Length: 471
Image (cartoon, rainbow, N blue to C red; front, side, top):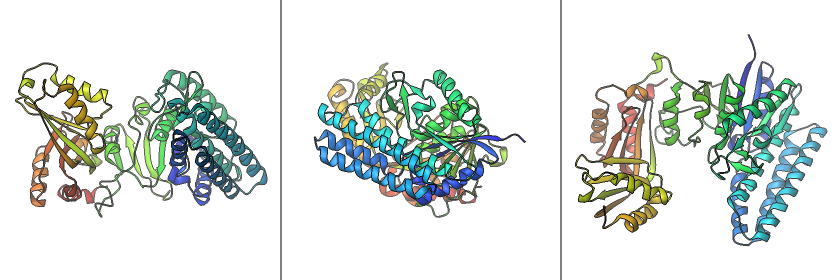
């Protein structure tokens, strides 16, 4: 049987301590004896937060706290370097590389303080140091193992080319595919395990860019698509995608097999923040993914494919919730029968940078109800009042402290009685439903309740649909 080509992505929590990194390196080294591997890793736990704090200090004009934070971060990575590797040559190589990054980071801080601002491009440059440091530790720890050799590569060095939208960059896939295949293919043909920094790429001018929250998952699927991986494994703190948040539902279980479209929906609600574009690179090639635990490596996790077998097509796969949302009821008689009303409302919200999570419109067209996060609520209402109140909008009614509860599962498509079960469960639990929506795909049925009722709603639905028995 030919060797499998696997991409393994490790999140920051999985490589925070020296013990974590050593255990990960041992697992990767063992796996490499029967498979060709590429490892993608995030910054070590807490490092990105430290870099953001450094940027905040610079914005306030406080150079000393920024330098103190940077120095502490570098010292922590040096201590890890000594602890994750025993070979003196490996330690020396890691420490020299970290010193080089340190000098570059301190020069960047000096430059930003002198300039007196932190531009989006500078912010991405600063955030790149998290992954640049972690790949050196991970590659060194793997190389410290007998029979294994790893090479650290930033996303830029690996060949990930993006546009210049700093903070939310998109890969230029045709260029990226050629460069990544050549770079990583060359490294693997020479017997090395490439260790690629997630979250970070570079634009066509060579400037560091970041892919946004959860960007290391996105990096893994970009790389997997470029090299034609057999599978992509997202290694983290959880055993896989669950039927519910275990902190809410004691009987929550790991789902063994879900579809891409189900996983996309679950990613929006699960505690694990998967980048919304993570699944795009693998859809066309139908590359299987596994969401697995970095510590409980004996558990196969959740397999994500285009079409799960009929035996696992449960009507409902999971139930989850997003807390702390606000409901805005937009009313106006002039909205009735007026083309473009919804477009003007959503254009106004888009200009203010507001993401609308749910929408409902009554048949009379006299009101539109939207749901946004509580953190966006004031800006949303302010924008609508300034631009549209007294014109197409006559009244705004706002309800705070709401939660979205969602049932997810492709098996709901064409299944009669799902909504009636939802209302039955809510009635038994004494929970009022303020708003409900379901798309024509019938993949996701979502409704809005008060924050204090959200966890009870999740438990009631988990019981109603028997998700504790899911496999």
